[in-house]
Image (tube, one colour):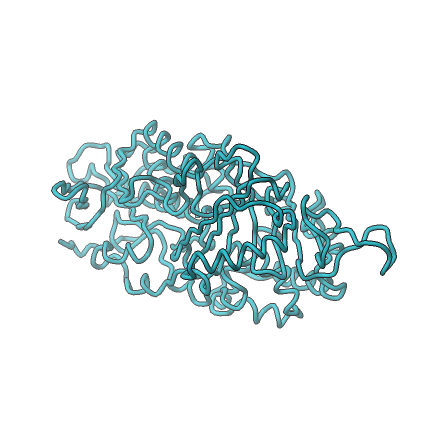
Length: 508
């Protein structure tokens, strides 16, 4: 049943349960147990709202989860965050998970160009055997050039100047052109609708960026953060990523990652935090309908073949992927609900390799001149013992490979790893497997900004959350948490409840 009500601008009491003679303690249902839903549920509970969180899976964490494979804990994919991801970092602190993550003291990204000319130390051209400067232990010298992207403590933009000057994967002229483009990028407003309709690659070319510069620098960062190459990425989202991560504060791009299984962080630890906050968590429970009644909402939940429950609520936060959200949105809540189905998804492929010995002594590195993108050491977090090593390859923008058979991927990536890490040539492969997230993120393509809805809808008391909503961020853990906080703020405002406990730094 749809009441036909529309939200009145500035109204803060229309969903206040006291207006309908119900108990002062309001009730909210959060549909979706990913990071957005967990963040929203915690903030609502902290404000004294009675919260039920409904999740169809048997676990929390959304697409940032773990599973068992023999004796190993395997993350479905490699997830990282940056120091500028303030909402996610506060979320980790809030659930008590700060000891389960690692954050670099200073940005330092090793970049190995497999096809490049080796960097020679202390020898004239043509003299002696070349040495790869600072190469990962175990890396050979055959046709490889090693560089690093790292920052200093100098103010922006000087914090990256020394690294850029020494970056061996670009010519001197290309390095100068990067500096000019970075200054121009710093002057863009990511919220400008005109930027949303343009692709990043054409802007880079207009600002003097060569194909090699795009490959060796802009896409090196952009593919990992946007899940799209420059030609398929919105200029607005790209500008947001580079301005915030590299051109806002010296330490903004310092990289962090989980040093424990993601499931321990986003499921076990998060569930304990929800329990402490008094949130009722319903797992293996699918929301099949949300009815907008005259005095609130009724959320129909299927908790089993013969277990159908109807949960009353004064506010509902729908925090599921856009294609799942579409059939659940009450009639009239969105002016153009079909736009949700126009937000396309982008895949990420993860290649997992377990060797019988160590072949890499760095926590991660990025690669050029090879299909391999980023390689992470997951040995400790997986629980692997006995002297072997577990590496995870994170392959973003993987449209061309997401459905490739595992045997074909093995035939392609094992030789590539031996090129990148020659120590792997003598190592035995104990295990090789692949995880595929076909809908890992929303596609950040030009024009996507006009499709992303905000948290508030036209139906009072009904709110949207998820990294795909209009957070201003690409599809990241930060964007997901921000969306949950924003939805919670809007819900509390609609209920006439204070929102001062929600950090301004963490609200979208």
